[in-house]
Length: 240
Length: 110
Image (cartoon, rainbow over all chains, first blue to last red):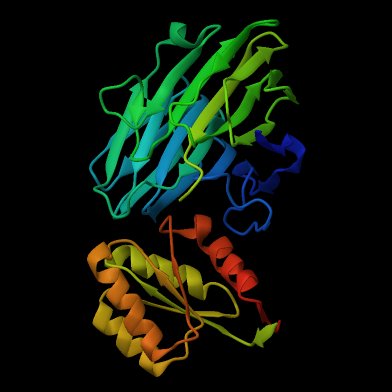
C-alpha cells in the first residue's frame, strides 16, 4: 500500500532576504526542520524569486545533482568549467557537481524578477566528473500530457543526471486525466504543483503543494482541476 | 544528552578551494570550530591533537581509501562521529551537522 507524505505550500520554510524570496520544502541553509530533511534522494526543492540585477555569487558545490527549472525571467550562469549561459523559462539546467564545481547564477535583468525551482538530488555515485547541460524543451511536448525532461540516460528524452531519476512536466486543462508509471519498481514519486490544482493518486494538491509517494504498487492517476495547471513529477530512488 | 561548549568539526576533502569555503562556513557559527584538510595524513595528525566531535568526509576521497581512513580516525578517537558531507557549500552543511547532533544526543550549551 502506497505511503503518502503531504507538504502543503504554506508549511514550507520561507526566507526573504530582499533580493531573494525563497520557499523551501526541505531543510536548507539556516533552516532546520528534522521532519523535513529529504524525500528519498530528493534533498532540496527551493522555489526562488531573485530580484532584478541580483543573484547567487560564485560559490562551490560537490556531490549533488542540481536541476534548475526557470519559471520566469532569465538567469545568467557562469562556472569554472568555462560555461557562460543564459537560462529562461522553457529550458532546464543540469549541474552534476561531482568532485566539485564553482558557479554563479544571476538575474540577467536589472528590472524584472527571475523565478526558478532549484532541485537537488543525491548522486548515484560520489566524486563523478562535473558536467553542465542545458536543454530547451519542445513547448508542444507538455501540452495536456507529461513530457520527460530528464532521465538517467544521455540518449533518452530530455537532459540526464547521474541518478536513477526521471522528471516529467505537464500542462493540463480542467478535467484532463493521465497516469504515471514508475520506471523503476522501488522508486518513489514526488509531485509538485507549479500552478493550478490536481488530484494525484486521490490526494488533492493546490498550487505549490508537494506530495511524496513511496511503496507504489501500480500506476499513479492524475487529474487537473483548473485551467493552465502545471505539475512536475520527480521519480527518484528512495535510498541514498 | 551530552552537552558541549564548542563543537569541533574536522572536514576532509581533496579540493583545496572548496575545503577553504567549507572551513569558513563552519567557523561562521559562533559555537562551532572547524578545520579543513586535504590529505589523510593531515586529518590523522589533526585528530591526534584535537578532540573532534564530528568528521565530515567531503568530495574527492577515493572509495578505496575511505574505509581505511574511517578506521584510522576511529582508532585515534573512538567516539568521533564520521559522516558524508554532500553539496560542498552552505546549502546542506548546517542541517547535516544539526542532524548529527540530534541523532547522537549532543547539544551545545548556548
